[in-house]
Amino acid sequence: MPRLIFLGPPGAGKGTQAERLAAIYHTPKISTGDLLRAEVKAQTPLGCQAKVYMDAGELVPDEVLIGMVKGQLQQSPEEGWILDGFPRTLAQAEALEELLQELGQDYDYVLNLEVPDEVVVARLLARGKEQGRSDDADRSVILKRLEVYRQQTAPLIDFYEAKGRLQRVNGNQPMESVQEHLQALLEGFRRTA
Ligand code: ADP
Image (cartoon, rainbow, N blue to C red; front, side, top):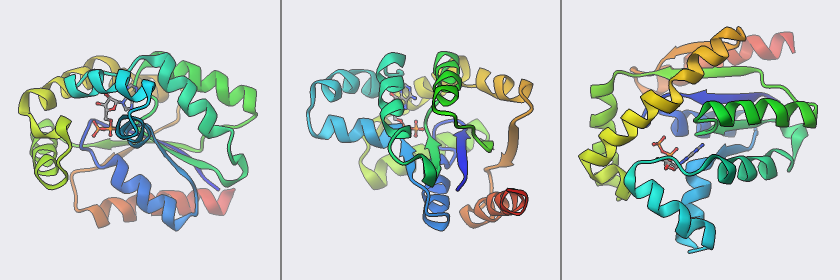
């Protein structure tokens, strides 16, 4: 079963594609945004702490996320996993390398969904209206998230490129076309696996 990491700006379609591939390959999806929103909804101490950062468009502290993902990766290693929203900082990427080494696991692909800024802003504003996500409803929070992405997450592209592990995928296409592209990539993986 594949082990995949999705990269890309907010609104690139990571969650959508991760969800689809998770269903097709019967692989658990680990979405840190969803996990955090569940904590917020349940008003756990972690959720109350995280909400402040999320509403401001900032990242939740690394140690919270690293602990969260560690627990998830240990759950059913034989089924693989699809990471959506993690890693988002170099510290998280380095922690993930260490963690996978400890667990004797490796990832198969790092999939970078490329989408221009203006498209991302339009998508997030539309999602804010449809789903009522508070961090999508406010243009200034969206712009903040994009800035945080550029500063803290975009360097991961070079990090994985330097390891020769990055796959670039054009995310500025209909969802079905992106999915087909990803599946074609993964079929190559399955044949050689
Ligand atoms: P997006 O559409 O911005 O990709 P997500 O649903 O992945 O949204 O995440 C929503 C928010 O949750 C982020 O803006 C951030 O505050 C927090 N978050 C999610 N994943 C992480 C992470 N790996 N590190 C830090 N914060 C995170």
